[in-house]
Image (cartoon, rainbow, N blue to C red; front, side, top):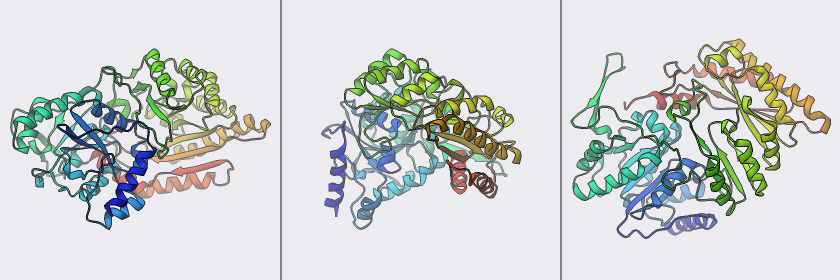
Length: 502
């Protein structure tokens, strides 16, 4: 059975370009772990950036671990072998450090599955040498690490470019000096302001269950733990914010992902990324051109990532540059009020098939409530511009359950989509092919550090009813496809976003 798993992993590796393989001798071994399937983890730019940062160090060997799926999972369940790393097929429990990269709260249950498959005790207090240290980083951890407090030896909070190398330097030092696991974690917390060791802190609660206090059990460790921020974003000490491994087995098949800016200055009140990744850091166009030209030397497609791609200064010139080099590109998201005809023409030449804009709410009143300053006219005009480009479909993102939302606000989602469709038909009918509308209707989930964090999640039954109303109202409209998330999973995400270690 282990041979079958190893064969599967080697087949995956054979499809990759850019894989790093190192000898383990004398190096800190890190199992960089994504708590979901391979195709999703390898589509995550943050995960790839951390992999690159770790393996650029001569004193570290980093290998990847993912949640098994399909045949792979069946093989693990039918054998006694523990979960293996991808690169060298080494058991998870043999690593010095297991580092989880976390982007989505609903992946948290998969952490426990991975630890169980890796034959590692689930609770931090039950681990002893030679068990690896278990840590986590990523945006959800510096929003709220507490739901995972019982399972992690420590967290590294903030942007990896700002603190990862300093953390590795310190870990290597304290592992050499300290014999006990508790001494290692204590020295990490004491000497690095971005390290949070849950076992060193004691929460107290009021009778109604709300938090009364949160303080160190022993000093001197920080009373407040800071999330690190890179002043220059992804461009740090020669490092470039791009993916280094390409493979056909991802959501972005054989495409190099490039971060073209970090943070967002729009301050939508529901968006955690807009507040956590402050200040906004657009990158210099010359740096991006150099990076992209290098990427196009190994791959003919790049994916441009930013909170709002069309807000990035010089985006028209940058996409024109890609087209002039014979490259193709895709974009992650656009703002309806910063979309231009030139940018759309470049996207047409790059053969992009779908463009996404996010009105978020159907009414201007509710958009003002959440600080999404888009008028109905701007949204309709953006959709019209997109529909002028042949073979482009449009994706519209809406949220339901926003604070102060009324039945009329939900009805205005339907009305707005119908008006958009009318304008699209009018624009694209003369050429005989109507642009498609893909509608994504998702539940508002309160997030820490946002102005809307204290507003409760709406009842699951109410969210289901709103989704049903929207789907029914648009069911007879041709050319519109409605997708929605699952309210019960939104409920789980809200618990994991706002919950504590209990």
